[in-house]
Length: 69
Image (tube, rainbow, N blue to C red; front, top):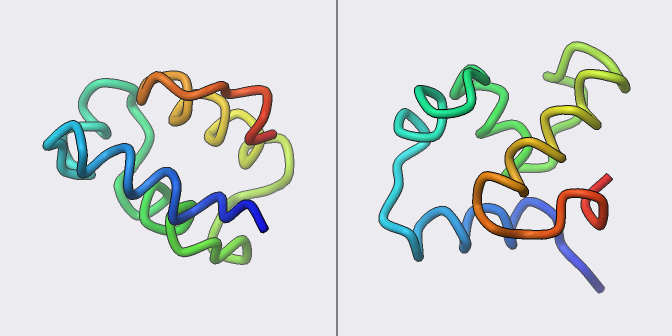
């Protein structure tokens, strides 16, 4: 089964990036990035934000953002 959080974390660490690096680049708070990586959906502000965060984060990491949404 496809794991959203694990694949995001793996792509980020393979690029040698910290959550803080990503936060500065795409302007999504690191607490939300960690929530995405942990698939802790309750910590995110809502469905529309979650979809946007997933797409932006995945695209930034060179992944297919539409697949994650």
